[in-house]
Amino acid sequence: MRFQTALRLIYPARCLSCGDLVESDFGLCGSCWRDTPFIGGLVCDGCGAPLPGEAGPGGELCDDCMTTPRPWVAGRAALLYRDNARKMVLALKHGDRQEIARPAALWMARAATPLLLGGTLIAPVPLHWTRMIRRRFNQSALLAQYLAQHTGLEMCPDLLLRRKRTKSLDGMDHAQRFGALSDAITANPRHLPRMEGRSIVIVDDVLTSGATLSAATDACIAAGAAQVSVLALARVAKDA
Image (tube, rainbow, N blue to C red; front, side):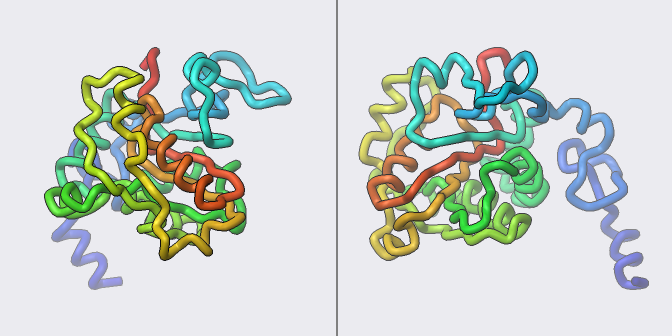
């Protein structure tokens, strides 16, 4: 206890977003918490985007999911990709702020409670090896790792492989995004027995068009998965 107290005096807990002092590690100060758009209430069963109204007896779908049917059975996201949430996602992805992944995975676990059933296998969206060398870590794998720790579920970091390097999807329209990801992701042959007949949750940092998660889902289904759900830290929504 004395050692921990001494450490706290030397390295006090600070807000993940603004750096102000907070009461516990891996937390947000009150102001940053208010500025972080957590998703709650009625959500789209396909992608986790917030919806107006109250939940009915069946799952509700947003306009995007009704227009573009998803290959996965259900999807959730913890945050809307704007304001402080966007700042933290970019800090994790490009700013080497890996400490953000631990609390972010807890937020994701809360958002995805209906998807994280016993026996579910968690897998991250893969990075191409050239991008992994440049970035040094896969932020989706880090989120998946902490999600598995929070939930006690099994996680396989290399269940899926990115067999071709794709250009950045930024600035691409819907058709271009899906075209760029065509045949880009495949199941790892080493783990085919682990996928057969399993329920799989694929983890990514941001869900935009769904092109990347669709490619990952198709790879899992082709490898024999019983069903696939998706979980993102943040969801880009039209009304965000």
